[in-house]
Amino acid sequence: MGPNVLITLDLRDQTPIYEQLVESIKELVNRGELRPGDSLPTVRQLAQDLAVNLNTVARAYRELANQGILSVRQGRGASVVSARARYGPAEKESLRKKVRRLVNEALSLGVSSPELHAMLDSELSRLTEGGK
Image 1 (tube, rainbow, N blue to C red):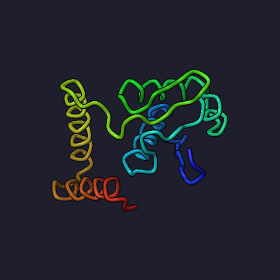
Image 2: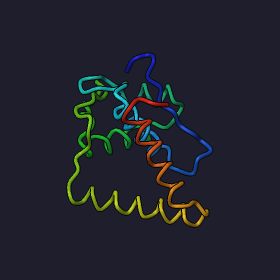
Image 3: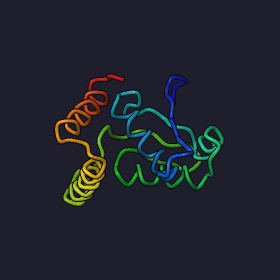
Image 4: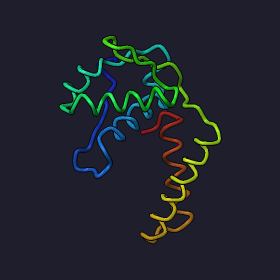
């Protein structure tokens, strides 16, 4: 992983650290900062760099490997194999549930439909067009 690639974790966030790590790596891949063939540090090295438990990094790498994004080799770290996770019926249903939870949370906070659409458009633009 290059020196300009940053994985961000928020230890105050209630989201489990391994999930934050998965999302952070996926975001780097989606933005093109990590490309197929790029290497990531070994589990031990990344755990040390981020000051998190080895099992946390191992779990995140396994999840990304299960999604078809990383290839993990014992003692050699991981490498990006695909810019996109597999998207079959199970993944589609999982995504639909996440969207439903997001919409429910937004509605409970009083977010209007146009405002939610604007937020989604902004995030899509940021991730797909390299905006920040």
